[in-house]
View 1 (spheres, rainbow, N blue to C red):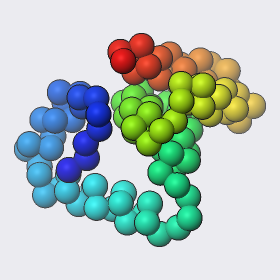
View 2: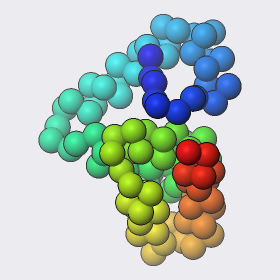
View 3: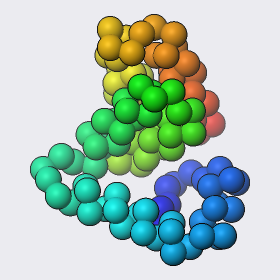
View 4: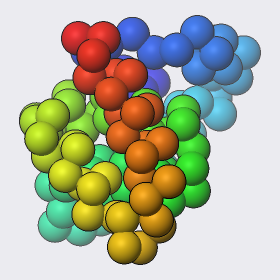
Length: 108
């Protein structure tokens, strides 16, 4: 199961309880992808955070912000990761992603 030092959203916990085999398989897939190469956990979560922002997934931005923090990323690294995307995904998408990341950063 996926765990972080902060509590997971209720809907995610509910999904884990209803579909434990699926949740375990998803966690195993993520673990296998992380072990397949030289990218460290923090960098991997920052990459996933950028991808989440690019597809405008609020939930994934929340999740990867939490996971990046758990992997040792600083608030500034998270914010800079999103800011770098401006010329690629546009200011409105980056602005939204920053606000979603702030949801997590401000809860600590």
